[in-house]
Image (cartoon, rainbow, N blue to C red; front, side, top):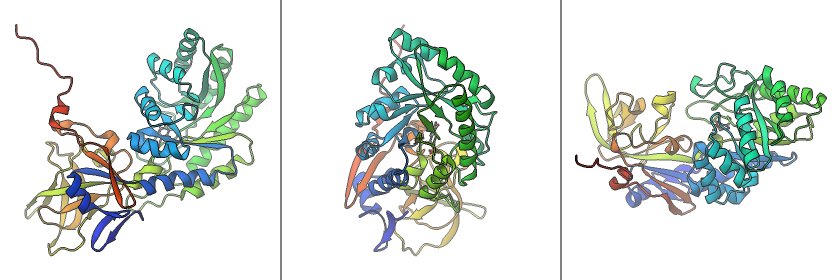
Length: 417
Ligand SMILES: *Cc1c(COP(=O)(O)O)cnc(C)c1O
């Protein structure tokens, strides 16, 4: 996290201190580093230079159009899961022919929108979806470019809620049905077979599951070749983990090297769909201590950010480092649960943290660039927070803090009767 460092006793993002950001934009506040985002994407892209490839950023990790635009300018592709994400990518200047459309529940209108936009590929996850897509494309007199997402049945050894490649997960076509589904696809006049896809989960911190998944995909590729079905690309999905606490995930380049070695000179385009690995360590959630509630049994630091702003701690048991913005303090060191104001016992950002705290202190909840703001809600009628990108010495507001009136937009009173 080199873009996040202490300078003159203050935690900085690139060349701007978080204390300055708090005074200019208020708290809570998500703050991202442009350099961290760009260099992560470029690391993947550069490591793949010997291979025909496309690095499709997984939009759901952080879908702010300011971030999508930075990546689009670098030439990134995008992995989307909804028509909302499609519109964001197009608005941000992303190229349709670099968009892959994933997801188990694509509606007809979403298929129409993606066909109209000319996306690169639909990653189809079931026979029913394949048949529906053929029908939608037929009505539009179009050919739908398709990869089948197969479920390789490998254990990603990650949190059960973010494991997707086991055969009892809802994702993808079971390996044993893959060949039959390709045969069916080949008979559908409005389906154009492009490739094969898989995505085995998220926050994966070893290489073995990726290699195992790719080997299974390569076996299918060979079987398909025997049947006369040739594929143009392999999409290996995303899932490379980051360090939150003491995980030691492979470096991006090492991950790519392992994939390239497993590909063993196959002349085929490789698509990857990293999300977390690009933005996770590139953002923090800035928050302020409102109250300290200390007792013999337990000490609570009640901060102004909450589970509606960052749900990972309670949803995935996610652990995020919590750091003081102003390094020096005379406050006594205590063990705190850092909690928000929401009326839920699950409303915590960190438990059992050794901290020195006083009312009004600013804290950074670290490594929250991925699945932070995108999972935020308005629970307890809390406006969603402002998002800032720092580039060098400048801080840019890429999303305004919501106002109270925004919370009620579209709501109506019933007529009096
Ligand atoms: C969530 C998801 C990704 C991104 O996963 P990360 O762990 O953030 O890299 C990529 N592809 C698909 C299909 C996904 O569902």
